[in-house]
Length: 245
Length: 245
Image (cartoon, rainbow over all chains, first blue to last red; front, top):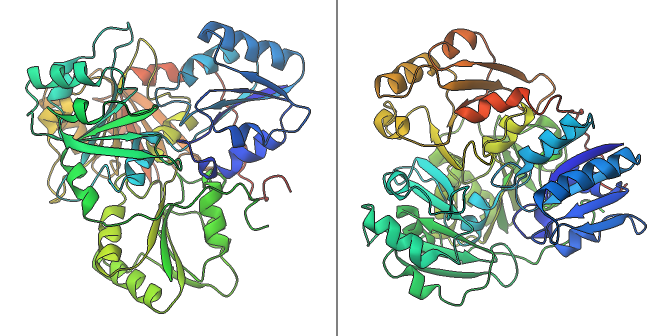
């Protein structure tokens, strides 16, 4: 009886941690996000329970985790990216703690740097950006984010869940004082074989990104201009072979 | 002939990615950071060249990577955390690209969320913090960071490489307007078996953290107060067994 909150990484199944894969391969039940790679869900034992999170509210997810654990099962909660970077892992941890269920948090590779990296963009770079701010395209109450605060950030700004509201967010940031010519990139399906990258300036990025598939990450700042500089970044198809086998 | 810039993760060797471990186990040479786990360096083949990065300048590291690759070797550059989150991976990538060396960037689990998580602190939490700012305790030119900008951030502030200058940084932030009663945590040797966590308020955290070993991460913001709430976070000793074996 235990639960592990496991970060699945940014998309490419090879980017799960060794520890996360080990727990997944030994679990009795996996409750998985839509954003977690299908190849990873397949790594759970054949007879493991597989429960998609899609149709459940957060409260229901919390309840399912507690119930499965109380049935004596070893449960993996497989979450996209990192459980604690906009992953609501803290709420699941609190629910487990309240129910007296032993749990472990296994961090994952967050999209924040991995997805820009897959597009050749380092989120920090000496002399270019020594600060990174992470935010989402909507505030916790579903309204717009605090544009004034975001427009005042230095360095690189990384926006999660920003594709659907990109036009509104770009306009909001410009109205709050961010220069329209700020370098911008949208990386759709980052780290996956069908990744798409669009770059431009903040005032035009919404037009340029029109029609891109989700999920996508928005990167704003001078580091975007470096994408051309490091040249071609080789990306190979992910392999799920056992390392060293 | 190729180079992979591989993120070793935050400390616990089980937190390297599956892809990173696979490359490490197949390499001809590994150039490794002091912060990368010794257990991971041991995963390179017995006859692989092992080159510590410690004694080298960044320019020399770039040159070594290029030279090893031009000798026809498959090289892993094993970096603490993530190569592109304060890891200067962009500079190594640029040097490789300039020399025409094929390279791959394999992201790693950054300390930014993993280390606070190991101390029970989610860097984002619904209703508490929906923005995270990452910075270092000194600017690129070695001077103090931009205190005014950092003091104005919303949400969670995560400071890398902040232990040695913690007293100075706390005073600078308070002078720039950050409330002295801001929740603060220092997590030393995060994710490792000898991890130590100290919490307090910004005005007292330097005293409280006195004598802690490095490396350490500094976390400021209301999320620190959640650390008590999720209860005990189980942390097991890292295992380097082959997953599924």
